[in-house]
Image 1 (tube, helix red, strand yellow):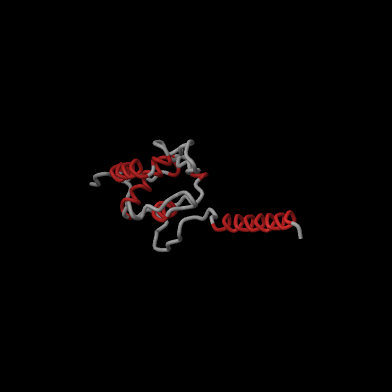
Image 2 (image 1 turned 30 degrees about the vertical axis):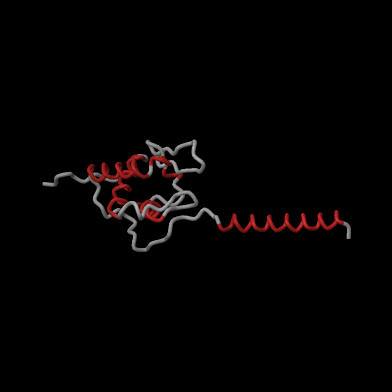
Length: 149
């Protein structure tokens, strides 16, 4: 066997190995949703108030705007695709309060990091109220009186 033939065989095997490794990597890095947590209710347990939404906005500006933008429409000049939070039809991992909570707490897909170390559950629920305010009217929470009689 000549040196050229050996080199060709080696190149073929290396090429097949790299192709197989790349195929395995794409399966391993599948864009999956957040962890399922049956303890998370589908509906936000924190009553909606303007104060809760305002606190949620503070959490958003501190933790979320860097990827999703000031207005929630997602930045276009980043290295990954952040979800446009103003369009619930584009929310990839669900539109319930519980879905938003899980995506925030546990992360979602390949690019959405978990925030369970930065935000406690009460803060995440406040954030959910603010996220709802970014979308169309039908996705917004119904306001409860600030000072009930």
